[in-house]
Image (tube, rainbow, N blue to C red):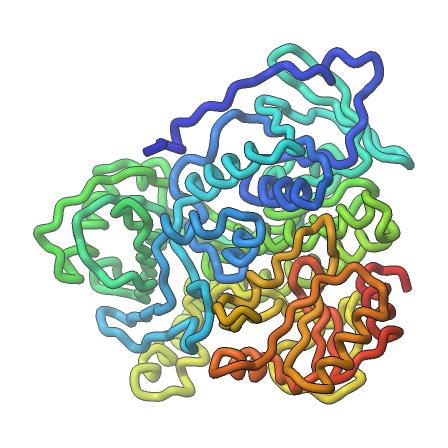
Length: 549
């Protein structure tokens, strides 16, 4: 088994370093973490060459981001590495909330059947990065350059010139577009004189990765004010390889250096295990860290030819698993737009929609993270009194459960108000509004075999930008298919004919009737839908989604 935490990638001198004038590339990505790697793979699959620069030559150490949401897994499926992530990770849907030592309620994040992927998997970040690096290495259009640090940038009308520091000295690189995926301490953000603003939370938390031979259900467990850690909160997750992740709230006055010492971590873990019935279980401490956090973002994610994604653009508290998941969704949003602009399918204005849509998503994530943190870490006696009263009521009164916030967990942002959406001309109900991420469902193929709707939507990106879902059979469905053909657009058409219970479930999720058509963007967000489209309305929907109108 590969030890991804100990991997070291070789620095290799590139011919660009000896070029008389800066070599020109359509896209340069800075930062080979989960966001930069996702973006690079997505672009390469869309036939866009990518240079990926990283100032280091290692993957992340310690578990760090571990909770990867259903929507993120669906993105990884499209990139060709989702199966591997799910097979290695620990799948879960259920969470439990405790007040003192009593369970007050449980929740199920995926209570309905008919989804290929679980609500979440827990998988250490170094595995995610390792699998993405291996996927990237299989794609010839990706050029990863380790130990290449960007130390300067000069923006021009036709691109940007980067100064790159290597073990062999500096060289210059011309990029038509730059994606800054270089993390919360973004060097590119500093070089451009930008900053992320928001709220810093005065609290400290200890993360401890431990290995032990204990058998607990694969659930998220969150304690408010337990007897084994009075006055604070504790979060417990199971990870791959028999490893467990524990987050202990410490308070602002805790000494980060002291709290990281094994002799101080051990009694905290021992007290937790004793309280849940594992008094005799032995454990080993792996990685540990003490952190503080802020909820903040840049004012704008686009600055000329530079587009910011992931932690370089925004930051949230770890409660709700919104950091890495929102970063992957940034990349998912940006990749198809960059590809469309680079390949001449769309105007430069399409990149402005990346900024507006993902700024909207960042605001939603920050709002939810801030509310969760305020509930978990009340900063006044009145706030704590309110929180404890809510928790006390929760066990017996359902209304109180809606007020409990142990971290509203990450879901895909519905891009309400996006300029790429076509407003409904027909009446629809349900969640699949323009701007929503397409919901999965089981489907039956024409040959009688079964599959999953989102898998059927995985068109070869080089042959089709948009996907059209056509529901039902009969005359109405045939008229819709004829309209799609007449539009003369390179669409990937997926028939959802509605055979059996599986087809009925897909139709219900999309409030579909025979002939209903949903137009999906390349990132599988709904951009238009019709009960009975015409060739002209389909053309108009695609043009709007490409920022041509």
